Image 1 (cartoon, helix red, strand yellow):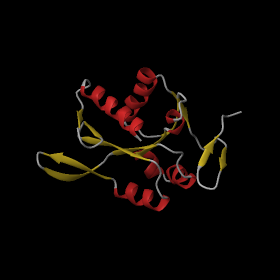
Image 2 (cartoon, one colour; image 1 turned 60 degrees about the vertical axis):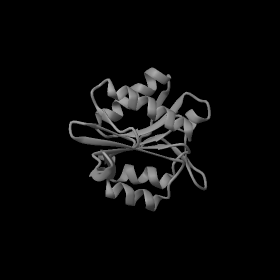
Image 3 (tube, one colour; image 1 turned 90 degrees about the horizontal axis):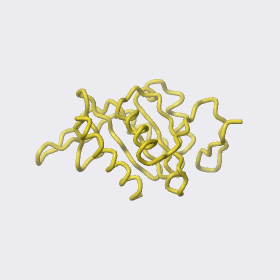
Image 4 (cartoon, helix red, strand yellow; image 1 turned 30 degrees about the vertical axis):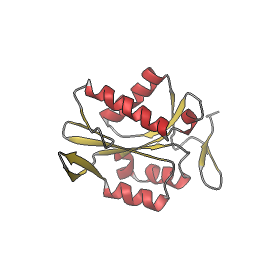
Length: 163
């Protein structure tokens, strides 16, 4: 997943110009005493997803030591289309939806200028991430909403364009 890493690295560099604190080694951005955590993965088992989301922690390095902090928001950057049950967990749990954003970056990694998003948070960092994708990388963002039709394969959620 080097492409996702490269995108996130460029975005974090852009965050410095906004005066936001970033981590060189971990993938979080701090602003207004809130941590906006980025997790990138190929896929994740739904039960592991729920445990990680419920925990809501991230690691912050301070000098040679680390501390665990509560992440105010977490964005999941998927290099493959996430499991339908992961998407459904965010839709069906208002507590998750307020703190969790999902970005299916698989179309982008396949050479398409498209990223599927599920972001109902009020995270200024995630809003800036979306602006960065649009303006810097010319990526079209398509929102996933409960009204969007889905087609289930054995593993993943596939998205259709609305009619």
